[in-house]
Amino acid sequence: MTLAAYGFGWVYWGGDGGRVLVCPGAVAELSEAGGVIGYRVYAGGGVRCWEEAVGLLGWVVGASEDYSGFHRLAVGDPLAGCMASALRGLRLRGLGAWAAALVGVAQQNASFRQGWGMLYRLHLAAGRRLLGPGWVYVEPPAPGPGLVEAARASGWGYRARFLGEVAARAQGLGSAAWSPGREECLHAAEELRGARGVGSYTAALIRLLGCKDYSAAPVDRWLRRLAAEAYGVDERRAADALRERFRGYSGLAAYAATLCCDAQPLRRALERLRNNMCRPGLDEPSPLTLWRQTPPPSS
Image 1 (cartoon, rainbow, N blue to C red):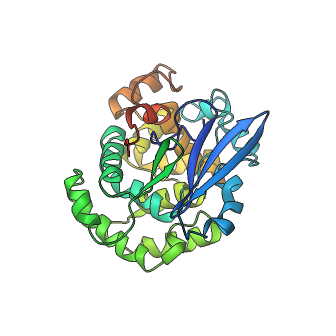
Image 2 (image 1 turned 90 degrees about the vertical axis):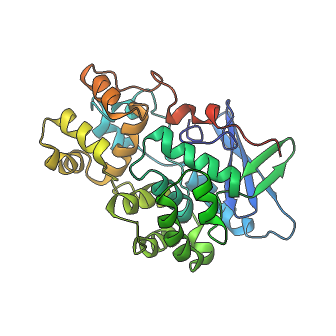
């Protein structure tokens, strides 16, 4: 489930396996058997960054993370409760600051379908293909020449300009922009925060998805409205109510809400919340079935 959540078709394809980027030019193919996660790294000629970065794989996929503290707070919660029941084994996958920034900019004023559709098209247009035995993995597009033009061609609209601002900062960070290591990632996230177009929502999303900072809650209009409904408070108090309820796990609770409500448009999500139906798998497309809608390229 960890790799299925917000995973394109080259990250997850069903079953107990998947692939994650170790570092630019290197991919780890993961498999699970008997509760043990095994991996095999595929890297291009001359690519050596994986030798050090591979040690972070367990942290990236949360192999040994203890979510019991979060689960205790989430039990029975109308928004995030499914993470303590149906999705109890799921862990948030660390992306690194740059990959998370791509998500954050794409999701600005966009629905799940719209934002991830733009991100998918940008990957196909500008992401490097890494080839393995019988499969193709598409790296997140690198910050560099041609990225803004590719984003415009992929339907990003005004967001393409903001993406260019973030990319300029990311280029100056070098490998730290890609690293899922917590300290490097948090440093990179702080640097990206100063870019035009990175407001409080996008900055929190980068810290959460990139660095696994579970206290960073990206609260947009969608979550604010749902939290106000769920906790019986005014919208102006909704973000505070979420943080008071989940404390250091408020970011993880925000992530869980999108999974439990299948990231549906606000009207549908509110309807499900009012009918106590915030559990995954009731609507498509959804974060857990994104991989079915985003197949990998043939080459």
